[in-house]
Image (tube, rainbow, N blue to C red; front, side, top):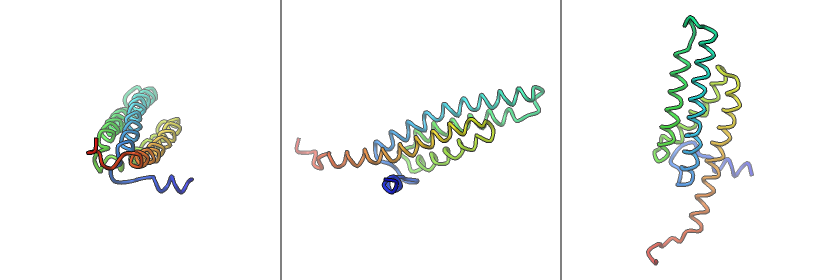
Length: 139
């Protein structure tokens, strides 16, 4: 079973329809988590350094930048940049745990959803190919 998942897992290229839909939805939802991470990190840093001596702007704009990149990756699933950018964003989301430790849970959950979307989307695409007539002009 693990070997099948690894075989279906893709790191580059363009997935077929269901793979693109599932991966795009996953990374699109991840944008909301990163948006709220940006606000939380900004607020926590602002509370620690009310005089403005911390990294408030970096956390806010960095988190918002990651959220925008998630939306771009979601929209780019039809291009060859979509899936590799999705993997980079999975790593970046895990790295946000160094700023807000509870982001490790969110990062691991979205990594699991991302892997599941790629693997199950590939399975769904294969089943669609198998059960769709190859000659559609007979109708």
